[in-house]
Image (tube, rainbow, N blue to C red):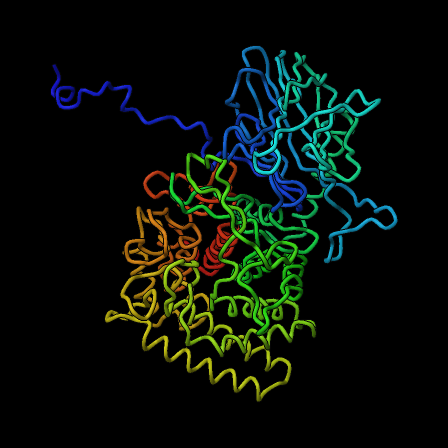
Length: 637
């Protein structure tokens, strides 16, 4: 007998890795109507949908538990398509199927149509000026046989409230094309189709043999009127209008004629898709509780807006000429209700809500058994001193772009500068929202310096020179302390004052212009992170064994940190290394050019909530940094 089997008598088949019933996170497609989002698995099942807005309870949540509801349209008895893509310039998904007897094409979209006037007295959620287009609160799906014939199926099984309540179906009186789904109470959705719909318990089903040239459709509506297309022609017209919206919006941007233009455009479409149109708020991601550690507890609800994203949001949107969205976000910041001391919370609900209590959903298995599944976010009331700098830097960027800012922003500026003045000496939870003991995090001190520096610049622009001088003096004091206490013996900036541990957030030091790019401490810090805080060349936030973050287990490499490293390497003159890292990161995108929050360094597997706004913001900033660098590079002979 072979020695291997003598040493390990376990049958070979038992030692094979268990196949997951969940698709890889990177294999999901993202749909949006700028009110809510859907994630579609490769087999054509909508596995995540939270109507009517991003942070509402789900009706499809199979991504978190295989019995928590889904909605499939596709060929019978097949789960692997021939190909998937976004229709260029849109968030409309096109899936091609090759069956043994024919070829099919499915198109999916959350419909955005022309503005529909509300009936008299009807409420609107808009606090920003509406555009000529608006979400119609309906998911439309068409399926066409382009060759041969094929048996198709529709399976719609909603589970209300994150999988707690099975659907109750009933037929509207006098309507042969529709069935209504309720939660047993007042909430209702309507499934409309030209397929013959049957009801089997909590599931609406249809089967049909599709012939060459034939198209069928279905639509799931949660609008106030429960309306939707009533024919294939109307369904295709709604997809066409949605296409016109996305392509028209993209045409307003300024995208360089470059080999990475497609990545910039897809990231822009993701960011627009993650923006809640009524208020201008951008959710950090479309999902909750997709794990940062496979099978672990690092599972968070990201369907909220973080103030620290403000700087990166404004920088990315302005660099692409998307000024309307940038202004909407700034106005959301101006609208946000502040704490009693005038400070902004670190995060808000997309409608400006302040209270985001965290709960666990014990009835859900979690993605690949990663538990707990959380809704809400307990970090909303943490003290994180970096928020003041993020907000003020974003307002400063906005002011530089527009040449002015509105008077209603000045009280926000004053209050955030004052809070930075009052708190910069205090420990906090840091940029990564550590749930351990507060520390004197270097990046928090850095962003307090940003708050005072940008506040002084904004005050000077308003002719408030005495105030500008006062704030600049405090900024200089913070600057001196960081340089004294925030570095180790090598001149490398550390995570906090009481450690030699590295932290990727210190890559921001050259990016926020704290020190010149040629300062030896900047170079030493960037290279130390690149060489010592990476796995397989990708950047970790920090070493979990060196950091008290209040959690157990490892985590993947953070994509935003790797994109920061691209920009930081370019800043210190490591141009080839920076461009090569950017090239590699772009090659690690999902099949549809989307990104989660993290990558498993050994495999390139995407981890965390999806798609992640922070990652796509950092991609835009890094890619534009590379493009600007190439424009100034000498041309080879």
